[in-house]
Length: 373
Image: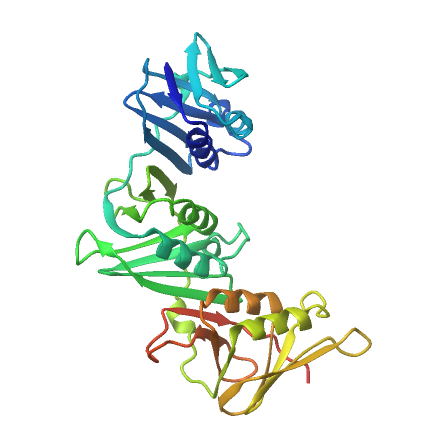
């Protein structure tokens, strides 16, 4: 194998592929990155759960394949000088030359490396930036407790031209709907994708204009979802768990709807939250023209701030975990935050203010913390 490639192109491709390398590989070869050079250069990594493959056009002088330590290759590529890189194989070694630098890496047995899973059938395409933004809005509400796998995923629901993303950790629920271009107008599919994998993947595929989503509706590729865009391809196994029936969690009625400028509100929550001890809330008292934010009590440090706000309905006192509240405010993507509330003990729904007063495409439900009387 022998080929030349620009340093920045190689470093970017190796860094992206190395993201899927396992920290503690169950077998040594899974710590490797597979390099295949021919009419195209393919870099691959796989940990039996997530696969990643980067493809780019090159003109190899000598085609070939090699398997080397992926993390070491990534560290080397990051440190190379700004010059073209020449990669060659010599027996059981791979040599990288870049400017005055030269590295020699030992190879692993290629024949021991597992085959990457095939992509499931293509289901449709979506704008890469819109997809990344939607995933980031929803993934914030996913759980981190691996003993409850259904809460660590993002539910992806596909119905025709609509994709709905949902996640919950039992204390909040985030749901986003968006449009896409399906392969078939009558497509209907559901998948529970690990939230961290989906979030990392969506952010990493914005180099191309569109992302292709591949999802089996049965048969070949069942239990797997794939994403492809900008020469990058990744697959991941789906979570084998039943997601909560979240539609029943939305409040059926509200007694008060408050609107407040998102930026000043978020800054006030941060300030007041400085005195909130762990697991203690920020208290909000909504009145007709204002909201009073408070935290701390008794002999502890205390903070109070008053902001202008509009209120349609009854006065209400309600309290939230400040970090969960800030997550919702940062995700709505609107200058005005709308809080729909029922009572101090029932869930509130945070949305942006739609430009045309239609249904918002993003909703963030948050459980209040019970106020002591």
